[in-house]
Every structure is written in C-alpha cells, then in structure tokens.
Amino acid sequence: MISETIKKDGPARQGMLANVMRQFEHAADSIELNPNIRKILAITNNELVVHFPVKMDSGEIEVFTGYRVQHNNALGPYKGGLRYHPTVDLDAARALAMWMTWKTALAGLPYGGAKGGIQIDPKKYSNAELERITRRFTYALGDNIGPELDIPAPDVNTNSQTMAWILDTYMSTRTPNERSKNLHVVTGKPIGAGGSEGRDRATGFGVFLTVKFWAEKEKLDLKGKTFIVQGFGNVGYWASWFLEKEGAKLIAVQDVTGTYYNKEGIPVDELNDYQKSAGSLEGYNNAALMANDKFFATDCDICIPAALGNQITASNAHDIKAKVIAEGANGPTDIDAEEVLLQKDITIIPDILCNSGGVIGSYFEWLQNRNGEIWTMDEVMEKLEKKLKTSFDRVMNLSQERGVDTRTAAFMIAIERLEQAYIQRGIFP
Ligand SMILES: NC(=O)C1=CN([C@@H]2O[C@H](COP(=O)(O)OP(=O)(O)OC[C@H]3O[C@@H](n4cnc5c(N)ncnc54)[C@H](O)[C@@H]3O)[C@@H](O)[C@H]2O)C=CC1
Ligand SMILES: O=C(O)CCC(=O)C(=O)O
Image (cartoon, rainbow, N blue to C red; front, top):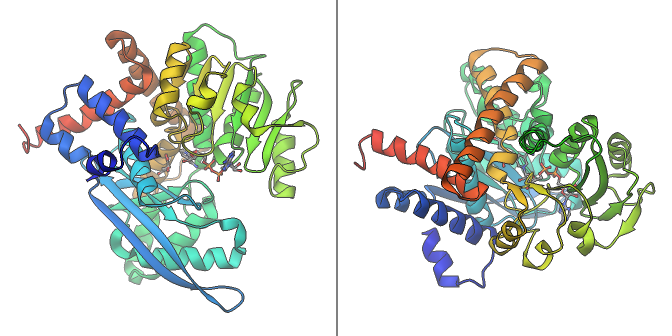
C-alpha cells in the first residue's frame, strides 16, 4: 500500500510519490472524502514489472526492466505515458500514474490513470537498439495494454516513433481481422500511422493557453513578458513557440547539458533548429552559459519547468522571481517549495491542469481512431482550447471560493469526480 510505504520510509524519502500522496491527502481532507473511497484511491490497482532480454548491435544480450503501473480506472481505461529514463522505477511510475488519474478526472475525460516506462538511458543506444527494446517491451506488456484497457502515450525520451513501434508490435499479436480495430492502443502516433493533427504540440499549446488564461485573469498583456523554460523537449519547445508567437520573450533555457541565457531573447525556432542538428542545446552560442543552479533565480515574469520532477525545492524556491509558475512537467515542485512559493504569492498553475493539453489531445486521437474520423488541426486546437478553458476556470473559481491554493482546488475537483462515480455506482453509499 502506497501510504504505508511512505510512512515506513519517513519524511527523509522525498520522492515524487511522497509529494503526490501529500497533495492527495491534503485535498482529500479538504473535501472530507468518503473514507472507503480514500482507501481505494490511495493505492494503485495494478503494478507490472517486466524484465526482458534484447540483442544489442554488438550481438550481446542486455536485460532491461520495464514498468507499467495502473492506478485507477473508475472513470474509464487507464491512460498515461511511457518514460525512458534512468530514474524510472516503481515509485516513480506509481506517482506519475496517480497524477494521471487526477489529470484525466480534472479534464473530464473518460479515462483513468497509468504510467510506466523503462529504466534506461536511451542516449547510450542506437536507433535500431531502441526499436528492438521498445518492441520487446511491448511483447512483455502483452495484454496488459489495449485500446479499451490501458493506452500508453509519449513522455520523457519517447516520441511518435516509439508509439509507432508499439502499435506495430501490438498489432502483430492480433488476428488479421482485429488489427484495424486496434489503432487506438497508443496515442501520440505519427499522422501517417493513425496519429492526430495537433497531438505533437498539444501539451505545449496547453501550457501556453493556461499562461494566457492566467494573464487575461490578471489583466496582463503577454507581449514583452519574459519567460524561462527548463527542458526544451516536446513540452518546453512548443510552450516556448506559442508564447513567442504571442509576443513573449524566452530569456533562459535549460536542458540536460546546461543553462543558456540571453536577456535580449533567444529565438525559439533557431534554438530548435540548432538542437535538431546538434542533438542537444550544448554549444548553442547565441546565449551565454549560466550556472545550472541559478536558473530558477533568473529575473523573469513566467517560469516553465518542463523537464523532470522535484526541480523546484526549498533550496531554490526562495530565489524565484517569476510571477507565475506554469508546470509543464509532472511534479516539478516539491511540497516544501510549494509552501515557499505560496508565501511569496507566486501563482502556480498546477501540473494536472497546466500540462493536461497532452492527454486531451490524446483523447481526441483515440476518439478519431475509434470512430474512423479524421479531424483538422483547427478542429483539434479549437476543441482543446475550449476544454482547457473550462478546467482553468473551474480551478481558479474553486480556489477563490474555498480559499485554497490552486493545486488543492484542482485535486478537489478531480477527486470529487471520482468520489461521485463510486457513490453513484452504489458501491460505497
Ligand atoms: N510529452 C507529453 O505529451 C507530456 C509530457 N509531460 C511532462 O513534461 C515533461 C517533459 O516531457 P517531454 O517534453 O515530453 O520530454 P522530452 O524527452 O521531449 O524532453 C525532456 C527535456 O528535458 C531536459 N532534461 C532532462 N533532464 C533534465 C535535467 N535534469 N535538467 C534540465 N533539463 C533536463 C532534456 O534535455 C529535454 O530537453 C515531463 O515531466 C513529462 O512527464 C506532461 C504531459 C504530457
Ligand atoms: O497523452 C497521454 O495519454 C498522457 C501523456 C502523459 O503522460 C501526461 O500527461 O503526463
């Protein structure tokens, strides 16, 4: 049981799991969540750990460890990304799966929450090896994923190509008659393989939209505002692209190789072109190198963590100067940092709201595959904006009405939706 694991290890274990559990417990207290439902939501439904062998280019065999944690499916099939990273383990997958449950519930989607991945540093492997690793992982997951059961999507170090390999491998295990009915086993696919227009940019677009809604609420103009971005991958790039288009200026960016600063502004597409040719931001010379631990202290209006969890901590939160933190990443702010930020009156657009454009885009892809439809980019973006605006307003209104912080408000809406589902089904009157 998750709660027991955390209690046993005590407060010294400040991982993402401890954070999500404390966020959950705080919101559950605030809505006086039915104690029986609380027990159910505090644990994961299923946890799968697989070890699978793969032949490397050298001919040697390596054995990899993969995870898929399915937290809850009261509202629909499990949904959530697959991460390829050395930090992926059972606790990370549990935490990220729980966040998915709250995220899909808050967005009003017919989904539950799951997450998984492989404990691997993908940079060490060739493309051909990554393809074989992904295909063997898919075999190992077997019938634990499926278009109406558990639908993976991209996350850190996975992309549309990874999803296409999973789709192809999964389909090869179906009978010929079933194959075309399984396109929606994964989302975030390339367009030609059943993907949706707009899913590539959906998360970053959603991050941008929530910043735009915040600015409108505060009666601020985004034109001329400065922003910093940690992580220049799928989420960081697209969030930057849309913000720049609105007239805001990217002045600092950090990736795994370092931190790059230019107070005159860093052109987003130029930076992306550089990254595409160089493989990372390393060596980008239209910006000065800056100490990594000074990144969050940069003088700016908007701060977008869009990399890994637990990046904003008690040790750097005091120095943050931004007026708003838009959490593109999952779990970037730990509990202690959150207290500091709230005291400093910095607005947090919480991850389960801020980055929910991704799973909303995935839902649109899944619906199109399921119904044999193809939507245009404009349709996708319009529907996404409408859904996000509804969520954003609900969170901000509840936060104001109940006098709670924005994260707690977002969790309250999500958890109440789940509570209602259990009660209406008559299991826990
Ligand atoms: N891809 C998606 O649709 C969604 C992603 N997210 C979350 O957004 C975050 C980023 O995901 P993606 O952009 O998809 O990943 P990605 O793999 O495309 O990019 C990750 C970026 O983070 C950087 N990074 C990695 N470790 C770092 C470190 N220690 N310090 C600074 N930068 C570091 C990498 O260099 C890279 O620029 C993750 O937390 C993910 O869970 C959330 C919702 C959906
Ligand atoms: O698109 C999806 O299904 C989920 C993406 C994801 O992993 C996330 O929102 O954290």
